[in-house]
Amino acid sequence: MLKIILKGHDNYYGVADVVRAFWHHPTEDREAGCVTCDEAPDQILISEALPGSTKCCSPDGRINVELPAVTSPYSCGREVKRSVYQALAGLSGRKAPWGCLTGIRPTLIAGEEKDPSLLADRYFVRPDKAELAWETYKNEKRILGGLPEEDLNIYVGIPFCPSRCEYCSFISSDIHHHMGRLRSYLDALEGEIKYLGPLIRRNISTLYIGGGTPTVFDDDDFDRLLDIVYASIPLGISTEVTVEAGRPDTITRHKLESMRVRGIGRVCINPQTMNSETLQKLNRRHTAEDTVRVYEMARKAGFEVINMDLIAGLKYENAEDHIESVRRLIELAPENITVHTLYKKRRAQMSMKDVMGDENDDVDRAVSIGHSLLREAGYIPYYLYRQKDTGHGLENTGFAKPGTECSYNVAMMTDARDVLSFGAGGMSKRVFDRQGDKYRVERCPCIKDVIGYIDSWEKMAQRKADFFDIIGGDQHTGDVTK
Ligand code: SF4
Image (cartoon, rainbow, N blue to C red; front, side, top):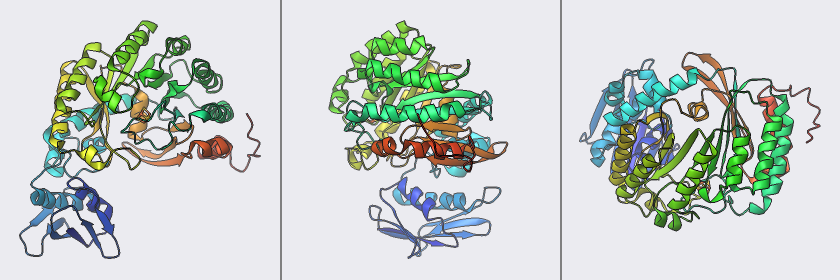
């Protein structure tokens, strides 16, 4: 068992995160003052913060890392992770693609350091990932420049799917079990949107209807969803509107036309892989041919921007399968291609071994080759985030042909713009105390459970109204009605 004793600091969380880059399931034992990991080799280490440096050493002196501080102003959290990372890299004989950067937004650090070589030197980020973070940061910044800070961005969430993909880590474990409640959910959503929408007094930069699978509704109810949104949310002529249609098995000509009639120009059609055999095994009820057919239908309907998602590291697939999927999408030529790496939460029907596999390097290689192919085909990275428990420590990257980027994704992922979310599980955010690239974010979560949302949407709507100062909490009389 690995045991890291903390001395002179209490960054249990950060130390555990660095351990997670090498092994699974570290435990923070705050009472005993250490972080332990059963899966790592037997070793005791002492992580110590000193004035101007941090150390990570074994009692017998065989592991002895001491690094002078590089952060200014001094950030104990980051400094501790640097020395712990170096000690664990030595102990494991491995390196993590993102070095000691364990947060979900490496582009934030790229923006602070303003030089990719510093990401590599200071945080041990692999040079290709350092370049990726730097380039993405610059594109994020450019896109944010087109999103006024005083504007609002809107998310409408539909947490339902026709079947549950085997790898699904969606918050709602009952994503397809509650299909019978679809209509009640739409009623509740209508209530919330009709109540809050007319109170919005801000320009709306972007609207994203996501899921789950928003096209899970039948044609009539899908029309109703769009009618509710368009009737009550004061969209501007230049509001960017995206619908994450998602699963090709739910997309019909009617739904595509219904979106186009309302002027919606952006849609996501997500194959995840272009291998039909894998799709079947993953419990996705469509084939690669269905994806192509729906893509062509969307093209004919006149969508200006089509995004397609892929996942690298899927069970049943090797590097070549993923690379082939990237190639096939490049041939189709959607404007946006988003490359995710598989990650897992407890509810997914896959074990950690399924996610980690024995071929982490293979996933890493597949992602690297896929990225190179996308760049050669003229796509640029424009938003990027990481998730814990990816196992292989990789990232999710949105690529786009220049000028076709989805601004909502950048607003949401950078936390740099206000977002009002409707529907179960949506996270509303407000940005405060903005000073250049620095700001403070407050969040207002909405109940995740679908039945809970149906029962309590009025309370959720009231909470969001107060959060956004749309109406004063004191003045509200409680008469939330449809
Ligand atoms: S489409 Fe996405 S949200 Fe729906 S079941 Fe599959 S992975 Fe989960």
